[in-house]
Length: 126
Image (spheres, rainbow, N blue to C red):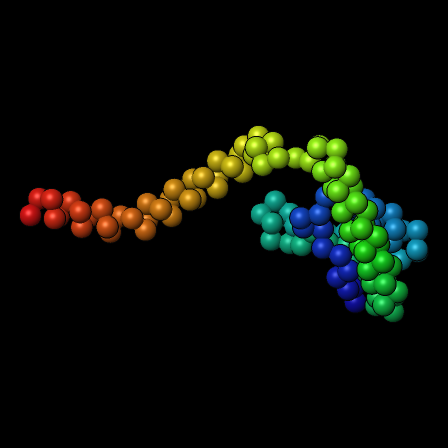
C-alpha cells in the first residue's frame, strides 16, 4: 500500500521539482496525485514501497534542512543588498489576495458592529 511521503500544497514549483528530482536520483518508486478541480484530493507525492519509507524520509529531511539553510542565507544576502521585498511590493504582486482579505475584514467588522449601530439609532430616536 502506498504511503504519503510529501505534500505539495503551499510548496513552490521550484521546491516540488527539486523533491521530484531528488527522489528520482535516489531510486524511490513514487507517484503524484493532484487535488483536482474542487480541491477534494491531495496534492502529494506518494511512495509505492513502504519498505523504502525510512530511507526516503531521511533523504527528504536532509534536503529540507539544506534548503532551509540556503533560503535563509539568500534572504539575508538580499536584505544586506537592500533587495528584500517590502510589504507594498508583496501587496502589489498579489492584488486579488489583498482585495479578498480586505473584503473579509470589512465583512467581519460589519457583522460585529451591526448590533451596536442598531442601539445607537434607537437611542437617537427614542
